[in-house]
Image (tube, rainbow, N blue to C red; front, side, top):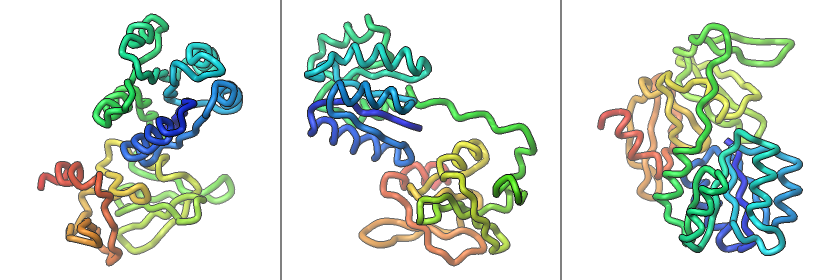
Length: 238
């Protein structure tokens, strides 16, 4: 998911980006500190969600929103404002939602959940297998063999770990795999790790009052993000 935050107030911009990353660790977030920067950004990149301050100083947020709507009609546009009376104006301009300053984390969560793009349907082929590699050499492995997937640590892709102990490196991102494996029992326990829930062997206290887990057939300790523990427990019915 790609998100743009457009606001000429640095504090508000930084705070909103922080909240977005807390709620959507896998999202790519770009920013613009003025209307002029925003217009340039929108000509260069595309986004799924745009948070736009109504008053940008040099350019009205409505102008930026109009350009965004023309360039990327499928994107969700959310106005940010310190004045509640602009809420009505937001809907008159047919944007998708609005948020008020100072930002309420619960409200940000609500907006992100409502506006997040639906997962792409799986590509044609066998949904029980994963094709790993490039055009010259492709390896197929059963999804049921995958115990967890982690980023490679170098920003070049992912490493897939299997029950047999074999590992496979692929150029796709962890977010790509999260989308491809949606509905197949995987959960992202950390921004760097996606785990097959049925292979979770144990959960235990870890550094700084946090938690970690291990999966079947692997001694590796996998830290759990603090914001992921509650949902993980719910999914595991514990």
